[in-house]
Image (cartoon, rainbow, N blue to C red):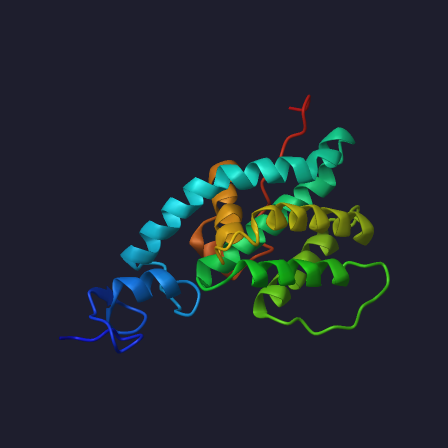
Length: 212
């Protein structure tokens, strides 16, 4: 019997390109995207991601609409655009890095909120995701000088609220799946090549009611 390349106990049944051998169905389901750096082309990873994103994207959208409702009400287009920019930046990151959890996503967004504070915060990012977000936001705000840090912080806070609504469900990637599905279903997923230049492409806009 060929043993699982992850646990070395159960029978390996699926080809795992990340481990270079066979993995049991249980280990594949339990650890993909969490403790295993699954390549995006893996058929098992891809099928699971597509299903979860299509399932949770609409649920995230409902939470997103609730969290951003004040921006719609006050017609604050710049804050809405920044929320969308952050989502697309996160999507680009996960085009290259498939492993991640809701907790890591939440921590990265909270780190960004602190970096956007009017009071300068000297803090090293706790993860590559936090660093990616902070760098992307800095580049965006250097271009969009009409968006001040306080407004940007409110936008980041709204996205945290949407993430929190799906977080802590017992599923470690539920909010992450919801956010990525939201980009694919409601915003428009960027091309894979865009992941290497996160501030070079214009962010899609959410159009406020009554606008064209």
